[in-house]
Amino acid sequence: MKDLPDIPALMQDIGVRARAAAAELAFAPAAAKQTALEEAAKHLWEHRAGIIEANAKDLAFGKEKGLSAAMMDRLTLTEDRIAAIRDSLNAVAAQKDPVGEVITEWDRPSGLHIKRVRTPLGVIGVIYESRPNVTADAGALCLKAGNAVILRGGSESLHSSQAIHASLVYGLEAAGLPADAIQMVPTRDRAAVTEMLTMVDYIDVIVPRGGKGLVGLVQKEARVPVFAHLEGIVHIYIDKDADPVKALSIVKNAKTRRTGICGAAECLLIHRDVVDDIGQGVIKALIDAGVEVRADETLRAIAGTEGATEADWGREYLDMVIAARVVDDIDGAIAHIRTHGSHHTDAIITEDDAAAARFFQRLDSAILMRNASTQFADGGEFGMGAEIGIATGKMHARGPVGVEQLTSFKYLVEGDGAIRS
Image (cartoon, rainbow, N blue to C red; front, side):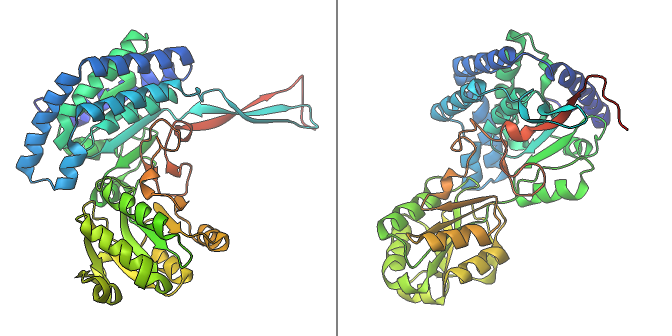
């Protein structure tokens, strides 16, 4: 699509229409929102061939731009991945509608009855890179929570995202909901992003989903509140009381299942007492699987791996690369994660309940795991149907941002002629 020259006018028009749609969605029937998502899922699957054709254009564009293998993997849509998007739309559709839910209620001696109920946030702006499935996830979650959404996908995924967006609009129209409830910025011009960050009259919250550069830019320049999704510098600590079979399978899965997702393991910490057995076995298994292990001196001596530099600690590779080092004990692991982590997801492998409790208590990542692959750091795997991202901040939303996290609340207060003395 040809870029439109007047970006401020374009974005203001989108904002005005989104605000109007949000006003209608705030009281839209739950059945209508469910129907919209179910119809969108059907349309998406029926038009999967066209979506794959659109994706081919994006892949050619990405190749021309020199995207990394991990980024190209994020960009790629196959029939199986489109089926997963369809299933995600249906899963969100089937969830309980959060709008109007009574979170809690109580009576006061003054005669007041007070309810705290869920209400939509309003208009959400989502800025994301590469992964076209975010178009469907973000659109579905925002709609289910009664919000209008303005989507600005990455330049490399423009055609794929537009094709998916067409299915979402079809679903809205089929359900009698405003088509402006889910809008897509129709330009690759980066000025549209800059404009979104200052649209305080039209956008209630911005959700950035992408690399460190994008999120940093949004946090630095946004005047609109932000749910930050920082990079996934994910650690796995193998404790002295780890089960060797679990350690081997968990670490291999966490690193190699899909290297380009934010829940992929990026740093392996091994207790000194198990370096010669469990540690050596895990390192060799990773190397055999094609992973480049950048290790400290102790592990290099054991397994002949590549040497780690200071830059390897606290790095998100999104590739078949992992940093690895030995720690003296669980407190050494905790200290390393506190220094180099991103508060996204961190895991411990141990059979010792006390060690797991210490790890959970003394770290403050959005997601902490025990004896499970970090690839489960995903809203769909948490039963949320989908997610917009993993929020690593501490205000309002944290961890997978699903339907409930895209709501606020209001107080409904009733009396029977109550007056204050």
